[in-house]
Image 1: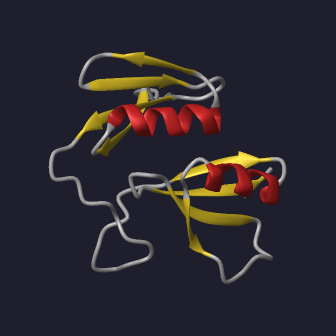
Image 2 (image 1 turned 30 degrees about the vertical axis):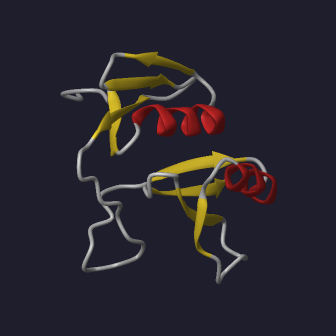
Image 3 (image 1 turned 60 degrees about the horizontal axis):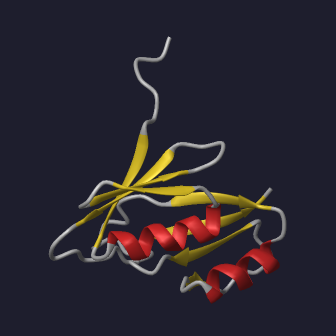
Length: 119
């Protein structure tokens, strides 16, 4: 029996509103503004929460000297279509060498790594 369930995945960032807007456009859902904290209620998944972190330093991918902290795996129907859409929203590609894999790695506008994974 589980002790707990996931209530939210919390991302530190320099601008909670901007990052919540980015993920709302990628995942859908609705943003609930709690002042210094924003929740994105995601259909069919746990909430993502965004909090301001003064002095935030984004992780580096991949780098043993700088912690990745965490990353999100986002399942998509078509990698090429999803890639075009997240890049238009401000994502940055982190690995472009192997296009034959079933996933691709990006950074969100605050620098958090995430993967688009073929569903």
